[in-house]
Length: 279
Image (cartoon, rainbow, N blue to C red; front, side, top):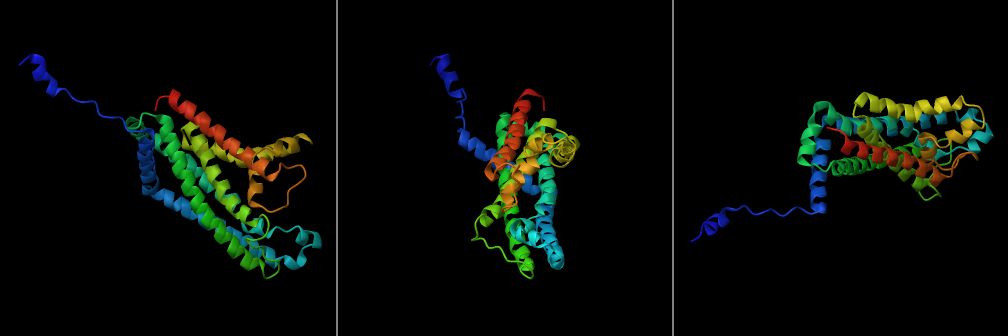
């Protein structure tokens, strides 16, 4: 018996590499476990639901209380669907901040090194975080938007005509509220991947959504109008309203496409930086 024949059986066999789909599924499960095991995630989602439903009901009740003092023109242009979803304006901050923290919290604790050690394909990790959080944000926001719509219409029916899901654009607006918040969560993840610091990413998100429109309003006309309609808040919010668009605004789907482009650019930039920088 030769020496080679004695050594050959001891040689280790190369294990087969998992397929990309199998690997992505494993990373998805890992990210889902992280997301649901953090207590702050559940509280943030509950706060989001409470804001959408609670503020929507509060605004509708206030509108009913002032119904007798409204001008006929205000009553004719009133959008009961969009009004019942007014809580989205504040809830977007909760979803956006949670999206930021999905990735920056791992940098803060140093867990990101273990994550990348287990999955060296960093873009795969970012894609899994994005898919899991966008799906959760959309599901939770969609339930909240439907609840806010039905409760709001019940309150408004005391003084105004009720909107129904069968009317043109109403179902789209309610579902659009959930889609808007899901895309906003993706924007938060992208900013978190770019800046890697919770405070900086949250400041960038708030500045982009709330501060920048205020600054643009100080520009002379028509610059303020031309620039303002391309800002994320003004471009994206039409998707959860029925009517009420100004002639200077982008069309509904063009505006939502611009809003999605902000999220896409932030995620792509985050993915590029993620692979070029140390953890």
